[in-house]
Length: 495
Image (cartoon, rainbow, N blue to C red):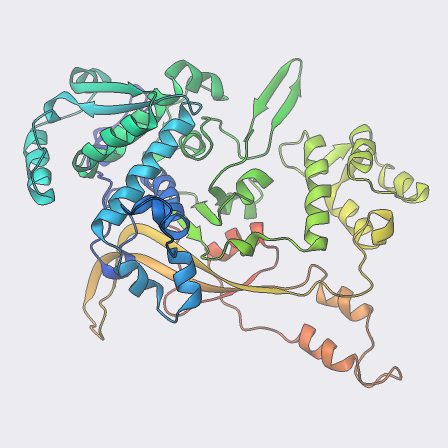
């Protein structure tokens, strides 16, 4: 079910040699390190939840008395001049370990419909490691795994052991005891199996569009979208749109059916291969797993308010949700005439009859054409035309973490390359939703008879900003349209 019947030894080796370990590098010490290709989808999903606890729930990651006020990492970074590397570098191993335990527990209970969690281990690891220091525990586990070769499902079943917990406290205690095991070379695979068993194998297969395909994709052994969606939403669906899509004849495929704590963005959307729905684009916390054609990384913000919408954005979101609910094209951006009338009703758009007739003339309605009409329709009629021009641009910071160890220049002025994950800070500027040309058409040009009051504003809006580009920017623009990004040093890598 996970690897298929014709899996190569190379792919099995990738998945049997990836532990869930924090980076020893101070700058990226909050991050999980990936050494093998393949399990990045599992690691990135866990990483996203770990960041949630480290950034926004410090009381969950430290043993303190109940109701003790604590300042979150997110707040500390916003209120001080300390760099991210300084703050993350100050995190204790206990704090990171507790955040990891909380994250794994939350994911497994999410997969278990918040009723239970199943945790997979190996019989050969049932040695007593209680009371030993962490390095000794790691050595004992490593010795126990010496000679273990997993070349088939039956090989794994001979040594696999599972336990199911309905009590969160008991599950957390078991996960805490198993941290040395999850740090071992079998850690990523054991956690994936735990998530699948928590969901239930039959339920996982029922979630999927095509259960005949393995969950780990050939030929490179990457985690499929079903695995990532399972860890983020608790369901192993193959699609990233919201809700269900009716294919006709009683057939339908499912996307994301619930709100999520951490979200997902993908380069494939910028290439028009799919459309990520609002559920994954706008998670509860500003943390996203980022997918490319071959790798998963993590994007996050320290300030939850980066997702706050102004009036204009809130209105657009409402209309877009209503439109997407009628879109049966798989995110293609067009709907039927009947569906369009339902959108107008649901979104409370009072469109003049001649506009309705024009849009419906071809028998289907395209989002881009509907959007242009909305921009020219006054707010009082449910449109987006803003004669006040109050919707200004946003400026905020995002951080990108790539857990795969790459060669980068050493710190403290050293020119010697070292292998470590990468953390990149991006300054993001999101211009107003109108294009500069549209804005220029609605204000006076410099030197016009209306006086000089508007000319300064025109110059500011039309002034080009210094911009840098990398594929990550295309992913960010699927969430914040036309965003401009800048960073110091090497461009962030999503591969």
